[in-house]
Length: 166
Image (cartoon, rainbow, N blue to C red):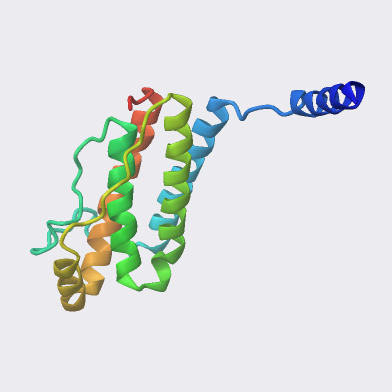
């Protein structure tokens, strides 16, 4: 009886010894690659001749160009952009919204590797005002959101090279 338990334990131990954790550098590289992919998708759907920094009244709820230096700040910002893009109901931004969800998952992996507790990201508090603005100017909101998201992602790329904190 003891021999059977010992044999099962040794068999399980040998199986587990072959399992390797994903190196944190690989996760960080995948994160950067996904950010570059999202930026390329934004560039593909952005219209030439449209101002790269459009100024439209009523779109203050879209995060600006502030520098986000922590993983939790990046996660929060991406949650807001994901909510905005999902609310646009535009076929051209569906994949970008999905990519943002995947990017948030990668940020969670980076945070857990650093033993950082990532709080649950809050979306926009005033979703009703978002819907009202989107009804009035869907195209303008999409242009502004994508433009600001592109700039924010470029800032995230720079910050990931500096090894951001929790």
